[in-house]
Amino acid sequence: MTIPLSARAFLRGQLAYFHSRGYDVHVATSAAPREDLEQVAADQGVKAHIVPFEREISLKRDIASLWASWRLVRQLRPDVTNVGTPKAGLVGGLAARLAGVPARVYTLHGLRLETTTGTRRRLLMAMERMACANAHRVICVSPSLRQRAIDLGLVNAHKAIVLGSGTSNGLDAARFVTPQADEIAGLRTRLNLPPGAPTVGFVGRFVRDKGIRELFEAFTTLHGENPSTRLLLVGDYEEGDPLPEALRHALEAHPGVVKAGFVRDTAPYYHMMDVLALPTYREGFPTAPLEAGAAGRPAVVSDATGATDAVINNVTGVRVPVGNVEALTAALRSLLEDPERSRTMGQRSQERVLNEFQPQQMWVALEEVYQDILRERMGRRQDVLKRTLDVTVAGVGLLALSPVLLMTALLVRVKLGGPVLFRQERPGRHGRPFTMYKFRTMLESTDAQGRFLPDAERLTPFGRLLRSSSLDELPELYNVLRGDMSLVGPRPLLMEYLEHYSPTQARRHEVRPGITGWAQVNGRNAISWEQKFALDVWYVDHRSLRLDLEILWMTLRKVLIRDGISAAGEATMPKFQGSPPDSA
Image (cartoon, rainbow, N blue to C red; front, side, top):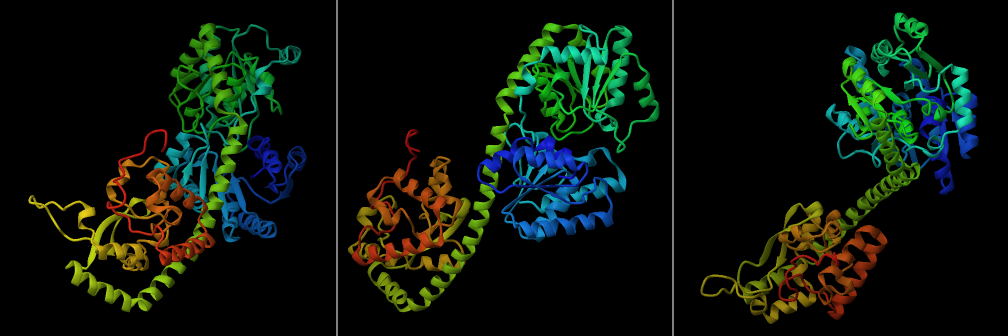
């Protein structure tokens, strides 16, 4: 994170969750304010580190940040890094890549570039592309943000994901649900906010991109119609993207504007609002509409990236076009003048927040992402070793067994005729078709209509010998050498079976098919299709070099005693037509 405040806002409870799960958790941000970083570490039981991040672009300081980040990552040697906010996402992500971190995640909280133009926009585009390129997964905090990032060419679709319904950390809704009447009464008195005054609220930074100008114009109209209307502003001005001086003076001078300033706990303030307004130009996934929803208040938000996901239009709030003051005014007016509709929307928003945005749901999903990447990276290392074994054994095998291959080919030619090889298109990894080669084991006999006779009638004693000894499989070593197959994996079946697989069964194609496999050494044709596929998927989930060597040894034993190792074919197994719903 760039600043400690981001860690407080985006990681509340998350660090403590992973610490409780046995992870050694570290958080790194800039130093200011140092007490915020120390508080995050103390509250969540994790270790804190200071890295000199700067929010704005500065080449010299950014190089210093990269160096400090790289040194820290090299020192800690983490298994997983998760970087967030634009500057930390770029610098921290690059440092993690240079340091060789096995699992790298970039949490995309929004796109600053959406409200920029020219050289600055091109620079921010390049920074985001690099930040995404450094990560194995890019967690977009809302569906619309994901789509926008893909549309802009910042990230590939397969790498960009959204956890649940969105947000970076869910929302601890409990503290917003139940109001403390005495506290709220005290705040009303301090802020001079009369009970019963129609109140539009805003929570956030007072900057251009939040649509403060449009909000103030809409409020001015509403206040002119009803002078008791109030605009409750919770937050403060920022130097980055500052408001025009004239607008700032107008806000300070307007009698209906109530400024609460920056507050650490926003929960009680929502209970003084009738409706939250967020006419923002861009977001990742705004927290304020969810907090308002948890407090039972509807929200009027713009249809900007990220913000559009915060409400279900006309159900939990109202969406208005970005920059459209008239639409914003009308939406706010409709909710202020119809308390029953406002109350219903607030209740529905509260239900949605409680059902879809629980922090625990997000943390469990995030942990699964971490573990998926680690398994994937481990699988890639194993794939290199597996491919090395495949090429070595297949190459040596083809040379060493060349006399056997030649003699078998001659016998097939004499006893069964030509062609010597059986060629058929089979599905490989990810279902991609390839041509599989085997020695023929059946005659080419046909009936009067030119159709092949049943397999059982065409399979000769010589063919049975080839199958029982697995000699018919030897040409598949060529498929292994080409990369179509592996020595060990689920057997390649027929292309027509692909459409009959359940989603679980289809996972057998996540790896290369094999000459032998876990199902082949655990029953082969003596078990049902469902049992075979279950064994295949088990292999996919538990594959390792050690397991492959064990399967090869078991295969050799079974070949020598001719126990259950026979080629896939319709002479011994009926065609697969699909599994019953309760067995797939």
